[in-house]
Length: 285
Image 1 (cartoon, rainbow, N blue to C red):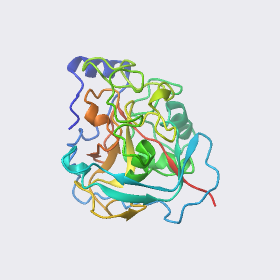
Image 2: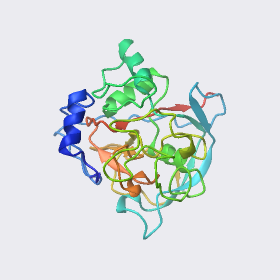
Image 3: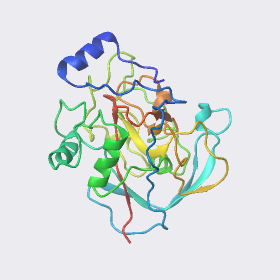
């Protein structure tokens, strides 16, 4: 369970301003999530061809083919961040920023997406209050897909084993990300912030907000541990009852939950005011 839950006053403020309204399941523990009997989403996987080198869509950045160690070593982190294992990835593209309210609203107006449950703001603010299927649908509308968990982690940390997108030093203030450093007040106030507000927190590839602002859906089903051994373009378990979310949100006050290896599993129908997404794209030949 994420440690920083909204206080009664925060929940009231969110409800009053229309930031959050949902009847979706409550937040699951990070190690498990329940699902109504018989409910299964089919596994939706990215293309598994070798890395191509074509241009990336506007607003996304090129992530080159590469290798890295996914997860943390023995004696570090939480059980589901283990075992550390080598991963090889083909080249792909990833949105430089989290999907914004304006971008998501355009999909709704086009009739392809259903409304988010947290949309009181406008502009280049990260959209939140979307479930996994809504995130998947938007990315398909945009010509992409949700990133795999391995793609997400590689884009966040690169190949040098860093703990946070910017390096190994834990966050201390608000320069690099939107979170709640003092345990009571988030950097930008209630709700997500602009997706370009923290350029100094960029990952090695220039991807923004991979720590803080909003948690992000990935394509993969959640499992309580990784499969040991080397993996090529892994796509996670074939099925499950929870999807992996990554990156931490604006209301998190523990640096551990902002670490690039931290994982949570959420019911696919879950929505929250600090949960959004970004899209990945296969490299065009």
